[in-house]
Amino acid sequence: MTTSPVDHSCEFGIPGLGVQRGDHICGLYRSPQQRDDVMLAFLGEGLRRGDKCVCIVDSSRPLQLLVDPDRGIDIEGHVASGQLEVRNSSEAYVRSGRFSPHGLLVDLDDSLTAAMADRRFAFVRVVNEMPPSVSDFPQEELLAHESELKRFAPRYPLAILCLYDVNRFAGMVIGLLKSHHMMLFDDVAFEGWTQL
Image (cartoon, rainbow, N blue to C red):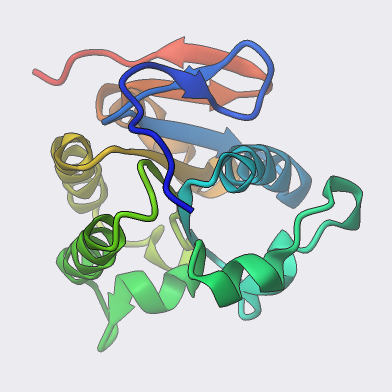
């Protein structure tokens, strides 16, 4: 199925909230339920629209996080068709015991290049959950990675939703707001600040 290009805002999956090409959004959550509500709304809307979806989540069984019978999403069917890719965030970010955001960007770039080359998808949604295992790494490295993602996002017709457990990353909230176009927390959206 070929979809039409996205030249304007499309629905995020939360009523009244839109996304557009190049958006880099931070979702803060306090519980797995809050994370799942935002993640499933974003991905569910994308799957419904025919968008390519890449989900990088912190779970030993990431596909299980996405199974929600109440939403009627055929996760296995979307994976089999290539519309949905699911990866474990700890494996994506930590390689050989070190925080490796560059490796994730290379993998993401390869995946997006392939998705755009086959022309089946006009828009891509990426969910990127920061694993707890990197909360001990220097904040400067994590924020530099987020700033790099903000520069990376406009290269493709995509929106990136980064998810952070506020219980583990509370000290980074101001830095995260600066390195994202928008922040979602407790059902409220905040516009990001321009990176200085």
